Image: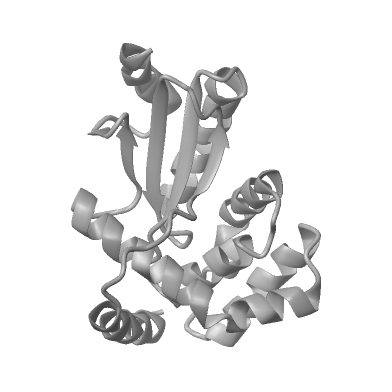
Length: 197
């Protein structure tokens, strides 16, 4: 994994120097656009704490608040390595927002099976398998992974997020642009959330 992180860091530094344009807003969004509360989560798909947040908070948040149009939820990609970057790219292969979020959930659920090891080819095959199970076609996934525009877009989003939000770790969570500093369990999160409703 160290080799992957080093390679990713090298690419990231080259791109961050080369690109000065602002990233388009292509983060994943679910919920009511007019909701009183917006929850933003900056996460890396290889981050175990991000997977825990998704399993322990997002699922209940969706049922109790997002589906009831009280909260708008944004997943912002903040990849920390090549594996996380490629997983984000495969999510963006889907055109349907619901399928994107389902694939996001599937990747977090299967994180221990694909986000391991130092062989990026093995990792990509594991990511592809999850993508295929979500309804994507093999050729489409291959084309997505080769798409440098999508790669650059995600990396630019990461750069812009770093500049704007000064992110130190993942996941970094904001509720109406106020950083959430509480415990990563639903009861603690909901207690803070209710103050904004």
